[in-house]
Amino acid sequence: MAVTAPLCAGDWAAPDFILPGIDGRNWSLSDIRGERGTVVAFICNHCPYVVAIIDRLVRDAEVLRAEGIGVAAINSNDPVQYPEDSFDNMLVFARAHGIGFPYLFDESQEVARAWGAVCTPDFFGLDRDGRLRYRGRLDESGRLPAARDARRELLDAMRQVAATGRGPEHQVPSMGCSIKWREAP
Picture 1: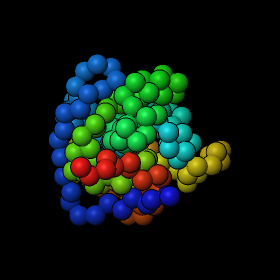
Picture 2: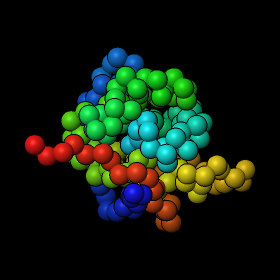
Picture 3: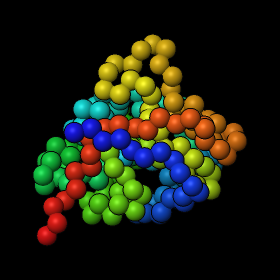
Picture 4: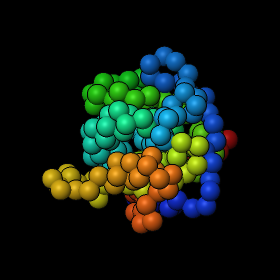
Protein backbone atom coordinates (compact mmCIF):
# COMPACT_ATOMS: atom_id res chain seq x y z
CA MET A 1 0.00 0.00 0.00
CA ALA A 2 1.33 3.42 -0.95
CA VAL A 3 1.89 5.92 1.84
CA THR A 4 2.32 9.69 1.48
CA ALA A 5 4.81 11.55 3.66
CA PRO A 6 3.63 14.64 5.53
CA LEU A 7 4.76 18.01 4.27
CA CYS A 8 7.37 20.24 5.87
CA ALA A 9 5.85 22.00 8.86
CA GLY A 10 7.15 24.36 11.51
CA ASP A 11 10.76 24.83 12.46
CA TRP A 12 11.61 21.18 13.08
CA ALA A 13 15.27 20.46 13.92
CA ALA A 14 16.74 17.15 12.78
CA PRO A 15 17.69 14.78 15.61
CA ASP A 16 21.26 13.54 15.56
CA PHE A 17 22.12 9.89 15.12
CA ILE A 18 25.02 7.49 14.82
CA LEU A 19 24.43 4.65 12.37
CA PRO A 20 26.63 2.08 10.63
CA GLY A 21 27.24 2.58 6.94
CA ILE A 22 27.86 0.02 4.25
CA ASP A 23 31.41 1.41 4.04
CA GLY A 24 32.21 -0.04 7.50
CA ARG A 25 32.19 3.23 9.42
CA ASN A 26 29.68 4.82 11.78
CA TRP A 27 28.12 8.07 10.60
CA SER A 28 26.50 10.89 12.55
CA LEU A 29 24.35 13.66 11.15
CA SER A 30 27.23 16.09 11.66
CA ASP A 31 29.48 13.82 9.54
CA ILE A 32 26.97 14.03 6.70
CA ARG A 33 26.01 17.69 7.03
CA GLY A 34 27.07 19.86 4.12
CA GLU A 35 28.16 23.47 4.51
CA ARG A 36 25.08 24.57 2.48
CA GLY A 37 22.51 21.98 3.64
CA THR A 38 21.80 18.27 3.94
CA VAL A 39 19.48 15.69 2.41
CA VAL A 40 18.58 12.55 4.34
CA ALA A 41 16.54 10.04 2.34
CA PHE A 42 14.84 7.06 3.96
CA ILE A 43 15.02 4.31 1.35
CA CYS A 44 15.31 0.53 1.16
CA ASN A 45 16.40 -2.06 -1.38
CA HIS A 46 13.12 -3.65 -2.42
CA CYS A 47 10.43 -0.95 -2.61
CA PRO A 48 9.30 -0.41 -6.23
CA TYR A 49 9.12 3.34 -5.62
CA VAL A 50 12.77 3.39 -4.53
CA VAL A 51 13.88 1.08 -7.33
CA ALA A 52 12.17 3.42 -9.80
CA ILE A 53 13.99 6.56 -8.58
CA ILE A 54 17.33 5.30 -7.24
CA ASP A 55 19.37 6.08 -10.34
CA ARG A 56 17.93 9.62 -10.49
CA LEU A 57 18.59 10.05 -6.77
CA VAL A 58 22.22 8.99 -7.27
CA ARG A 59 22.52 11.46 -10.17
CA ASP A 60 21.03 14.37 -8.20
CA ALA A 61 22.99 13.50 -5.06
CA GLU A 62 26.25 13.85 -6.96
CA VAL A 63 25.20 17.32 -8.16
CA LEU A 64 24.12 18.37 -4.66
CA ARG A 65 27.29 17.08 -3.04
CA ALA A 66 29.39 19.01 -5.55
CA GLU A 67 27.43 22.13 -4.53
CA GLY A 68 28.16 21.70 -0.80
CA ILE A 69 24.99 19.84 0.22
CA GLY A 70 25.53 16.63 2.16
CA VAL A 71 23.51 13.54 1.21
CA ALA A 72 22.88 10.24 2.97
CA ALA A 73 20.29 7.48 2.81
CA ILE A 74 18.96 5.40 5.69
CA ASN A 75 17.34 1.97 5.51
CA SER A 76 15.06 1.43 8.51
CA ASN A 77 13.06 -1.55 7.25
CA ASP A 78 12.83 -4.72 9.35
CA PRO A 79 15.21 -7.20 7.68
CA VAL A 80 13.58 -10.14 9.48
CA GLN A 81 10.27 -9.63 7.66
CA TYR A 82 12.00 -8.28 4.55
CA PRO A 83 15.36 -10.07 4.10
CA GLU A 84 15.94 -8.21 0.83
CA ASP A 85 16.47 -5.12 3.03
CA SER A 86 19.25 -6.69 5.11
CA PHE A 87 22.58 -4.96 5.61
CA ASP A 88 24.29 -7.44 3.25
CA ASN A 89 21.72 -6.71 0.57
CA MET A 90 22.26 -2.98 1.08
CA LEU A 91 25.84 -3.55 -0.11
CA VAL A 92 24.59 -5.36 -3.23
CA PHE A 93 21.98 -2.66 -3.95
CA ALA A 94 24.49 0.17 -3.50
CA ARG A 95 27.00 -1.45 -5.85
CA ALA A 96 24.33 -2.15 -8.47
CA HIS A 97 23.22 1.48 -8.50
CA GLY A 98 26.52 3.25 -7.92
CA ILE A 99 25.51 4.84 -4.63
CA GLY A 100 28.37 7.16 -3.74
CA PHE A 101 26.89 8.71 -0.60
CA PRO A 102 26.63 7.13 2.86
CA TYR A 103 23.98 4.38 2.97
CA LEU A 104 23.18 3.70 6.62
CA PHE A 105 21.36 0.95 8.49
CA ASP A 106 18.84 1.88 11.20
CA GLU A 107 18.39 -1.63 12.59
CA SER A 108 16.68 -0.43 15.79
CA GLN A 109 14.34 1.82 13.78
CA GLU A 110 14.91 4.55 16.40
CA VAL A 111 16.14 7.08 13.84
CA ALA A 112 13.13 6.58 11.56
CA ARG A 113 10.82 7.06 14.54
CA ALA A 114 12.70 10.15 15.79
CA TRP A 115 12.58 11.71 12.33
CA GLY A 116 8.95 10.75 11.69
CA ALA A 117 9.82 8.85 8.50
CA VAL A 118 6.81 7.04 7.09
CA CYS A 119 7.65 5.74 3.64
CA THR A 120 10.36 4.80 1.20
CA PRO A 121 11.46 7.08 -0.28
CA ASP A 122 10.99 9.84 2.29
CA PHE A 123 13.18 12.93 1.76
CA PHE A 124 14.24 15.41 4.45
CA GLY A 125 15.94 18.55 3.12
CA LEU A 126 17.73 20.50 5.86
CA ASP A 127 19.25 23.96 5.83
CA ARG A 128 22.82 24.55 6.98
CA ASP A 129 21.60 24.71 10.60
CA GLY A 130 19.80 21.35 10.45
CA ARG A 131 16.28 22.77 10.22
CA LEU A 132 13.77 21.04 7.95
CA ARG A 133 13.05 23.14 4.87
CA TYR A 134 11.94 20.49 2.33
CA ARG A 135 9.84 17.36 2.79
CA GLY A 136 8.81 16.63 -0.77
CA ARG A 137 9.44 14.20 -3.56
CA LEU A 138 12.42 13.66 -5.84
CA ASP A 139 10.40 14.47 -8.96
CA GLU A 140 6.93 14.02 -10.42
CA SER A 141 7.51 10.59 -11.95
CA GLY A 142 6.95 8.42 -8.87
CA ARG A 143 7.20 4.78 -9.98
CA LEU A 144 7.20 5.69 -13.67
CA PRO A 145 10.20 6.44 -15.86
CA ALA A 146 10.94 10.16 -15.68
CA ALA A 147 10.00 12.30 -18.64
CA ARG A 148 12.92 14.14 -20.23
CA ASP A 149 11.56 17.44 -18.95
CA ALA A 150 10.57 16.21 -15.46
CA ARG A 151 11.32 18.95 -12.95
CA ARG A 152 13.99 17.86 -10.49
CA GLU A 153 12.07 18.99 -7.41
CA LEU A 154 14.49 17.84 -4.70
CA LEU A 155 17.47 19.28 -6.56
CA ASP A 156 15.72 22.61 -7.18
CA ALA A 157 14.42 22.79 -3.60
CA MET A 158 17.83 22.15 -2.08
CA ARG A 159 19.46 24.73 -4.32
CA GLN A 160 16.87 27.22 -3.05
CA VAL A 161 17.50 26.16 0.56
CA ALA A 162 21.25 26.60 0.05
CA ALA A 163 20.80 30.05 -1.48
CA THR A 164 18.07 31.47 0.77
CA GLY A 165 17.73 29.26 3.86
CA ARG A 166 14.09 28.67 2.91
CA GLY A 167 12.39 25.83 1.08
CA PRO A 168 9.86 26.26 -1.70
CA GLU A 169 6.37 27.35 -0.69
CA HIS A 170 4.81 24.59 -2.81
CA GLN A 171 6.03 21.10 -1.90
CA VAL A 172 4.49 17.87 -3.15
CA PRO A 173 4.87 15.04 -0.62
CA SER A 174 6.83 11.94 -1.44
CA MET A 175 4.90 8.71 -1.92
CA GLY A 176 6.15 5.18 -1.46
CA CYS A 177 5.89 1.94 0.44
CA SER A 178 5.37 2.18 4.17
CA ILE A 179 8.37 1.67 6.41
CA LYS A 180 8.35 -1.98 7.42
CA TRP A 181 8.19 -1.69 11.20
CA ARG A 182 9.18 -4.52 13.49
CA GLU A 183 6.37 -6.36 15.12
CA ALA A 184 5.92 -5.37 18.76
CA PRO A 185 7.24 -8.01 21.19
